[in-house]
Image (tube, rainbow, N blue to C red; front, side):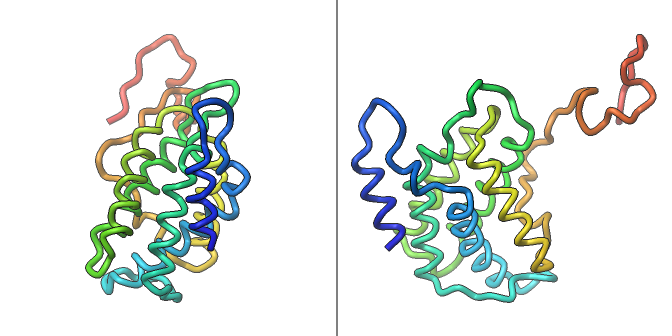
Length: 185
């Protein structure tokens, strides 16, 4: 039913103004959709230590992936004022990787595969600037995975590293805020 609501709201969107899916794309609902899909991906991989204790049915994962795809106009809405965000970049990479892994599972329907791959591509393309709904949803999903003892590195993208500067996670280094150049290998 939730997927169908998201589909109807997305279909009613016009070119101007906020997306109609914004009322449905509350971070807790988006995080729940991510949980259902990731639980299926983790349950399907026998080699993962600390995988999911829950095995959602395949249709639930398909509907959740489709709901995420329909809500993308609201989920990927940029923050105001626009700014860069490492959290959004990480969230985009991790969620896109998870949706791609779901699409590649044996037994995934063609509709589920199409929704997941389309959503993964749009999410990847949305990285770089702050996406508040995506960031909060990703944080809730990560907290769920921590509580459940699931591996937190399972969906990290191995495509590229995230650039940092001295105002980021490396600000403890002695060369920060100094006149000399510092290289980190």
